[in-house]
Image (tube, rainbow, N blue to C red):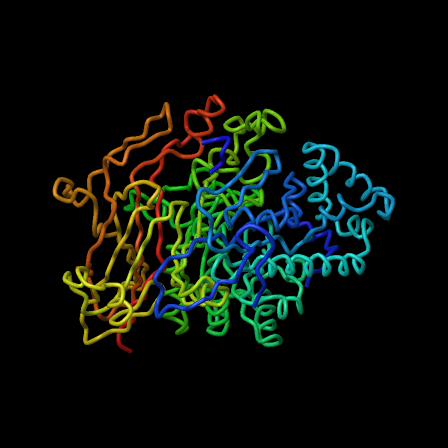
Length: 635
């Protein structure tokens, strides 16, 4: 918790950096004796992390103000206190278990390199001018960054700024230095630091970004350099790069699509890369390389949209402001684009493609992460440091650059529309690179919008209520499959599911647990339905006309406080689909809803005495989304 408070693609045209088992780190929790790591028979504890964080090595993050490096980010995520770029003490109330620093491969370290280089060694006046601007003030640094983005669209002009061959060499040095830091701070059994980067393809401003995450250390990762979108704008080219890495090094790598909500329908298309129907070959490659999807983060929530899920009363979370245009905010989004932009629809589209090709390209587990560009992995509403240093807290308040950057005064979506989450929850057998990566690869994960509720989800064919009084977790693994798994038909018997949710021990009570089902009907149309399977105060909250009454609201808008006088600390049930058809392929995932709690904007409005626009959302029901379980009928 904060103790004192209770681009992006440069190298599209400036392709100056054609970026094509470990010791305990120094200091803090990384020092001392090594921990003996023992893998458990099955996952016993959930691990919490952020797979999407930017530091000063991301050109946009540095250009827009952040000065914290990878070492600071790792120390912060592991629970240490650091000083933010704007001079505020920052510390997590609870440390994370793992972190992926995912700086942009396009222009990796370029802006930082210009700012820190001896001025007299810079080869031309333009670089010297940017050097001066980066070091003069946050306002001038921002101007320099924006000039670079503009130049990225002019290959002729950018080619005159720096020599690509020299930039390639410097880019490799930056990458090698970075992975050395990551390995130094990887501490098996205590805290896991992953090598990774962000692939930042953005054709026409439509988001196709992926976080690329390695299972391996420097011995393998140092043999490559991050793949920039300037070397390939299609995800298929990225997957080929990843496959080549695995073949050439014997290592392992996966990619995580993110911010599909601002892709204008391109993230989850029904067509293949060259156009036309998606082939089984491409569907297979995509499914292998992308076992997860980032469902929620700072730039909105991508589970679903009210237009796609009109019967889902909770479908509007994190949608406001982000459903109007693509990531560049230059091309408007139309309703026809929504299905390719949201995860629930992607899961249904996967079933449709599988019916035609035999392969499901969108067999994805779910996680959340921050996408913070401050080097601070803050996912708590009362400890949010913003997306960029534009909206970081400062000792004087948030009005850092000018009034246009002050919370609530900017008319677009870059203020209260930001979410404070999320985090990735992983059921792994140990806190190591290998165990966490393998759990992600088998999709035994879930996403949260920030709270750390504990969620379990198993599917089988013989679970009964009496199991909950015994060792039901062991039974779940022995007689069924966990979240992310495949449940194959058994004599036309309806599957039963173990659903369990525990509140965040330092957070809000739970409102309800729901199962979201998706399938393809006999006419070939994608369908979905949401079932309330367990909820608080079940005796008094009975459904009326098929709708469960609201849990209530205890938030005090004057103090940003709430009471856990409503809701439940734990919700558990054995649930069987009442509309099960043994011949229909389907997926099921769990959504857990907390009682209403204050959003970060309310905390800030009170701290800084701000007047917010009337449409500002001050209260929300935070949530978790598990990875699906896929039911497969008999062939």
